[in-house]
Image 1 (cartoon, rainbow, N blue to C red):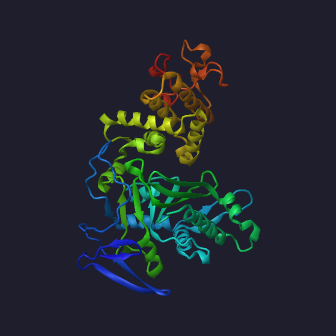
Image 2 (image 1 turned 180 degrees about the vertical axis):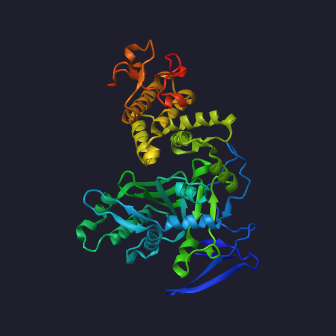
Image 3 (image 1 turned 120 degrees about the vertical axis):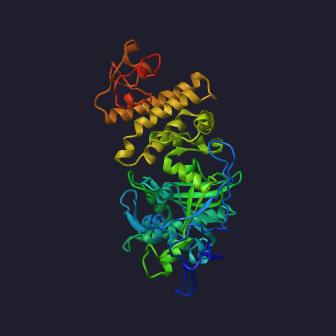
Length: 458
């Protein structure tokens, strides 16, 4: 076994593996390149994630291999993602920073590993991984849209001071990306944070120790989320977003190799599913299946993501268990967001950040109708009068989305009081209601049997 900057590769690949050794600045990097990778290549010695998947929930026992070597097509897509020039939009009159993604990763890593006296964080980075929707896009056979780029830097962060150094290192790298003519006073840490950081989170409790810095402040554009993880008990919501791709070998390739990536000349890249079984999770991604384990461990229960998957055409991998999982999702959601104001803020932020682009925005109304149905049918932790304000909130948001996209609304069913139904007093046109059921006919705003007052809360 040979380790290349945190990523382990194997030598047992018969005669079609060549070793490339080339001097990079003052150090030597050993890079193993794959030539016609054998399908039976075995991996061992890979570091396990800190989360150990449970056997319960909708999915298999998780006894399969959690790691896999990426094919050439997947490596090529990964290289395209990392070679993309991403814009980091600033607030006000701060300029937009354009940087190649792999150069951003390399620059942030260098700042983290630099000594504190040299302006770095003095933190040893174990490895860097691509996570979330971008990783699913790389692994899937068909195009998978993704709204942001999630990067994980695994490192030791024993104290709050180390997290402060990480934040200072990231802001320092942003300052280095500013145009040379930028006044020094504008490149202060406080100014850079206000201009380019849209979200900053720090968690240090119950076995979790990590921080998040989200870059970019422009709606409709991909944000870059940098997550610095020491320990994290739960690293995924559903199997389809459980993929992590180690980037170290690809970054080493670009540092050392002078030839471009080709079908017979590309680095060995390893992917992992923290769900537990890589092949099973990849099957779920390909077949658009929903599976998870112990949703009560997820902040918010995974409820919003679950309904988003339903709106995008995913279906339950285990239909006989999904109702039980829905109840856990709803219970955890109302535990984490008990107040109506918190629920509104969370819902509006989710709609704003996870439905980007014309096609995605067109799904918002369907998403809200599905969410309404799940909350109505599967919330067992609240009394009816406690649940009604949340349902009314979802109906209001559905009304807003429908009014924004449909000039013609559904005529009110006979018998609805004032034609307002549950939306009374919310400023709607008298004689019209908003349908909140999820059938295809209602999605096309056509009257159907399920929209009658006794069956539809609208």
